Every structure is written in structure tokens, then in C-alpha cells.
Length: 147
Ligand SMILES: [Zn+2]
Image (cartoon, rainbow, N blue to C red; front, side, top):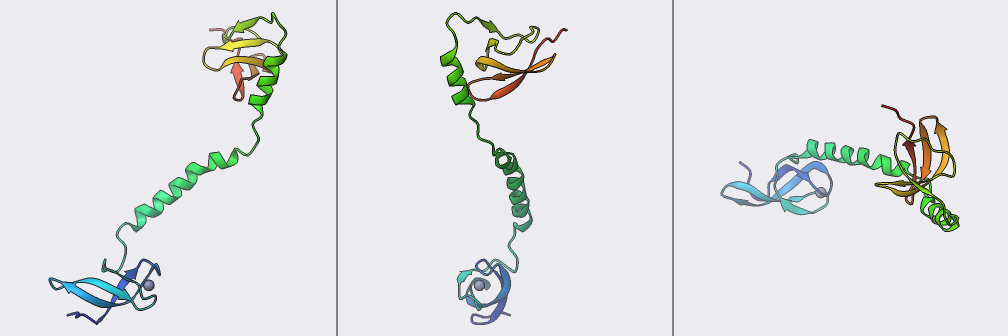
């Protein structure tokens, strides 16, 4: 039976290793507090290994995966400035067409999207899609879609 002052193997949170500890005191015959012989830290006796080791590792890898798309977004988004410039330089009387996927648009057309607001057609990507500069970003929008 282990007594106070005896050596006991325990997991040290500071050293992050299973190391020799000294029993500091016991409560109701159970080892309660130990001192790490390596770093000298005193802590509650938890046994030899931390309980939730595997779930913690899984959580860490999940966080890393979630961070990747944000890190890849390295390009500078100057769309707000570009949009501001375009709307300032827009000639008076320019007709703004309500956006509809069934319509066909061309470069320099100005559209009004129900969600994104006013947009400037930057480029025709194909006969079915256009790049539109909105006030937050350039979006690829569908057009000329017939049902
Ligand atoms: Zn230690």
C-alpha cells in the first residue's frame, strides 16, 4: 500500500509525461495530492494518464481544417473601392436593370440584384454567365437561363 512520501507514477501536466511523483497526502486512503519529482509541481493525483486525451486531439485537427479556407484567402479584395469608383463615375441617366437569370447582359451593364444590390457587369464569362462587381466582391452570376 502506498503511503505519504512514497513514490508513485503519475501524469504530470507540466512535463506532459508519466513521471515519478511523491505522494503528498491521501484522503480516505486514496492518493489525493502528488508532487512531480522532475519539475517539482504539486497537483491533484489523476492517475497515470489524462482521461480525455483522444477527443482533445481530434478537436485540434478539426480546428486546423476549419482554419484552412480563411488562410487561403490571401488576395486583397479591392472590390469595395472599385465599386465606389464605378458608382461615382456612373453617367447620369444610366439605366439600372433588375437582375434576372433569364435576361442576357453585356459588359458595362448595370444591374440591381435583390440581395447584392447594384452591380456592374465586368466581364462576360460565357453565354450563360457574367462576372459582376458588387460592393463587397466580384461574383459570377448566371444569365440567359431558359427553363
Ligand atoms: Zn513535472
